[in-house]
Image (cartoon, rainbow, N blue to C red; front, side, top):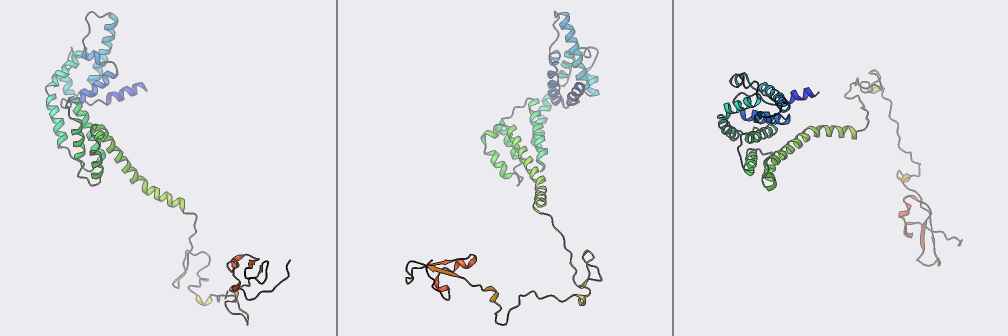
Length: 314
């Protein structure tokens, strides 16, 4: 497991080809420092060091040489590795730096010019990744760009996208964000992630909502236009009334029959019974009381009743 992690860490360092020295230098420095091997590359062994320290230094030096030579191209290997540097990490490190130090100034200018020439190609994730890479490259070649200028440059390349225009304006007006380009890129990443999440989940959510809200249902097939529907399973083609309408039995009349002395609307009429009470039967201030329920409670005036029958007080 540990060996696998070491190999993975080493493989993260790009192969030095001569034109990518700045990137290689930053990555290899991080790796050597993490393994406590950077000192044996940058410093020489003290001639008066004890045997224990000398042996430890040599062991670390050999390990550093092994890592460095595994991440350089054949051309760089031929130019920098010899009988002296193959045994001494400090000598190898110094020679590689001197060999490509003169090219570093060219690399610095190239990094910045490449960034200025780059454009936004409607792929926000690719643009964010490339911007992060450029920021690392600028740092590796010691190009110091004011934070606000870098933030405005990042946002300016996106301003022509109508989908981002309003969001870019919001970020531009936030002084706290433009002072830190990393935060600008983080906000753009959040915007991209949320947009992708909406695009991915909206159709699924709608389908899920439909499937959850719709209960079990049954499809009913009918025969029509004088033809039998083969999907209809409750009768055969021979029994199909659509094809043989003369076999259809007569419809039964379900209407309520009326008596000889009863109007058709009579079944909608019912008798309301009530009684009135009060201290003085001759007074008009008598209370009308309905003694059964339903809608008859709406008739609460005496004028709605045909006649009244006086009964003795109970």
